[in-house]
Image (tube, rainbow, N blue to C red):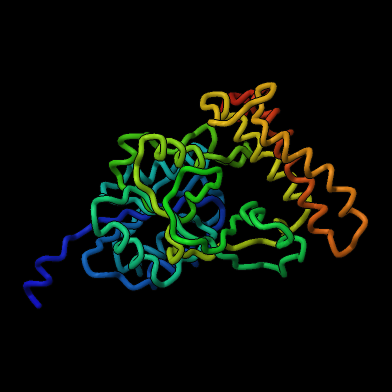
Length: 327
């Protein structure tokens, strides 16, 4: 047994948790990490990044530190933005692996075990997992009419284990991911232009980082049993929220497209598939609109058009500096 213990390599994991005015949910998120069993050979340090909160976040973190079973540090990042907060946590630590969850999530009890398992060898450079819903209110039936749009509210049901990259589906989620520190040294940190903040609804920093990692041929894996439970508040379960979120998703992708065009055919500076999806949606909208049983399909038909409008605005009209000049 002693020989076996000596052969176990210690892997240092930094877990970065950015937070902004969610002290109660933050407490639940950290409690889930503290409850999760720690596998042999994994050494964890927790970095809680207060992104300029005005509530009692700092005092809550001090309470957490008093009962933490592994090192827990508090960082104050006054520049608003999810990317800025994550980057501050990355820069503060020195662990070989950097893990990420958000303050409105709780990890599955096997989260640490999965991370340790996936990075036991040297081949894997980054991983991401499933985001299951923790509903604040009953989910409307239309939400499940078309697969894929659940991502609008940060929900991603477990998919088959697969490599990350090589298609249009984003499998890397900054709210449930782990990355070798050496990767950030190669590709850089999260984009501070695309990260969401209290002053901007831009938000494609995860997709941007994934694209940079994949472009260098780094090996990433989507791991279905790496699970977090994401709190979904009632205000996100509305048509208005989905329209606004899909518009701004399009804006973010349009901003990205300024510097990095997708490997697809374009028309008038816009990927043709975006135009095609919008036209198909509009063509079928009337068919579904007046059938109560097809309410979800009718609403889903709208969303590609919102994304297209956002993409056009993001690529050709938005001035990024106006959202960040005061930060």
